[in-house]
Amino acid sequence: YGAEHYNIEEVKETILETDDTRLIDTAKRFGKETLTLIRTYKCVDYEVNLDSKGVLHFNGETFNTPNKFYNGGLLKYITGKRGNSGTNQLSQFKVKETGERLQG
Image 1 (cartoon, rainbow, N blue to C red):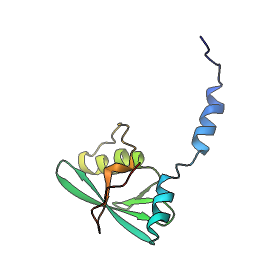
Image 2: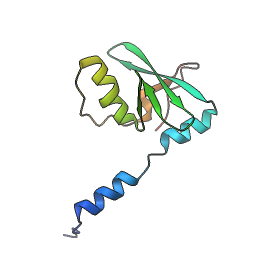
Image 3: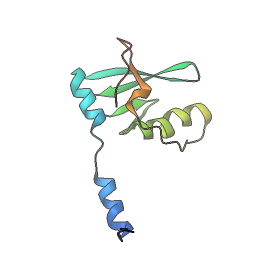
């Protein structure tokens, strides 16, 4: 049926080396050293800072993907436990200054 055989260790290394450039591209687009974003969860707004290198800063921790921020940052902060959702889209964030929702 067209399936291919892969060595999971080789695939895992490739996946771990692949950078998610969406945050970097977003930081470059706004051209600021730090961009304050808002992530709303259950009607409460939480501030998240995006630095010029594309890294999210929340509650003293750093995250390089929206999914890692959501599960290991926001949900961990709110519930005390890491989440396990696939919330990886940029559209979960709004720019604090303008209210513009990020795309992607």
